[in-house]
Length: 248
Ligand SMILES: [Zn+2]
Image (tube, rainbow, N blue to C red):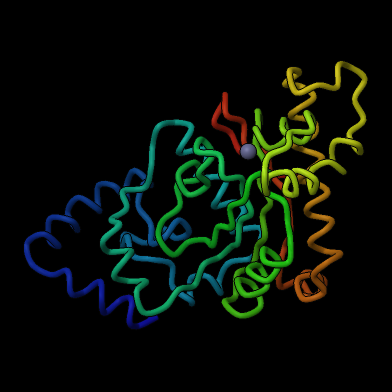
């Protein structure tokens, strides 16, 4: 923790004084923080002490606020170089995300997150497997993250592929992991990949089932959640509105 603050101090000189002047203005506007989570005027990476002070609910609240800034075209006046230097010797991310590879759904951008704020596992269709669970167990049990978020999104190509029974090399096996969600989605209209309303209903069901699978297949994460040290939840990102809806 001290390392981060020391590192930040090495940015001295007039650049730093100018930064401090600018930051006091930005602080007044509520746009500046250390990582995404604090009201501090420093734009350094999240520290261990800052993370320890936060509950899982507060961490999710901070991600929601970041998404609100994104939707308004605002973002924290962060300094990536300061975040990079502050986090080089240690990281204290508050959450681990499981999100799709879709180029239009980068979690760090749409929730205004900085370097060191979160772990992000990305795989088409945001499904879990042993490697993803291993990554999450490292993130939470070893590195101390307090929140797991599985985030799907609208108009997801992987979901469409699963609905259409697309076949292609290794993709076939990946889509097979989404198909249970296609079957489990109750929907009265046209059940095709051309019907975006159905596609989005399957994407939501896929998130719910992935959250359930994480609890079922990772006793490590389930125990953390049962003890109150971790919150596991789902979310959906809407490509049209830019909004992230958390399930809980
Ligand atoms: Zn997708």
